[in-house]
Amino acid sequence: MLDFIEMTMMTQKNKEAVVKLIDEVWSKGNLQIVDQLIAPQYTIRHDPGDQWEGKTLDLATFKERVKMSRHVFPDQKF
Image 1 (cartoon, rainbow, N blue to C red):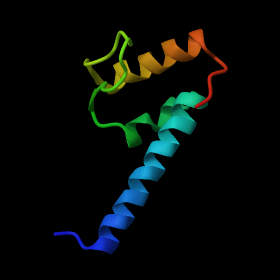
Image 2: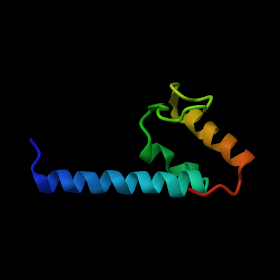
Image 3: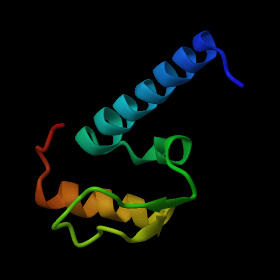
Image 4: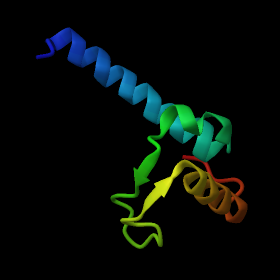
């Protein structure tokens, strides 16, 4: 079982990964780091109305999703 310090460190590391994903991948379009941040199979959750909701994507498809979104909204920032 993890102690408080280990849990806190894991939480901080996870937070940093999410911030990096949002900033580098979604806001800047840096697809080179996706493999470091996303599992080989990624299921879209909590995105109601999105055509991808509930779908499981591999890394290549996830990257295509980002490209398509950024093509339509090249200035999007999160």
